Length: 136
Image (cartoon, rainbow, N blue to C red; front, side, top):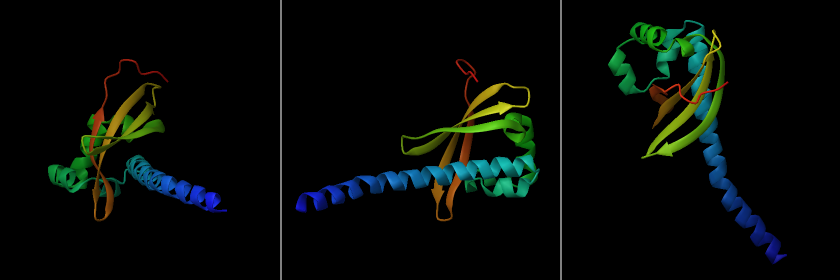
């Protein structure tokens, strides 16, 4: 009986960090999906609310932010499909890789940088990765 109790205790200790990580990953992926949904609805105010204070300060308002997304990230503004890949930590930063297929059928890989704030996770940067080696 004691061995069973120890085994259960150890499995709970090991599972707890995985749950926290899975919870973080789900929150991040929901955030990105919610921002993309807002962009698709031309709701730039909501999309802008998912950006970090740094990004909000850089663009100043939701109209400027929306113009940047339309011009610089058309695949995110009007995607055909979005697929969440892996979340990783690199140098203390959290990144979510996202595969986006645009309306023309081209596939793009993007890295979203996230920051944790008292209000929750926010998007701090998006990097469009080079096209080499990307396949649908």
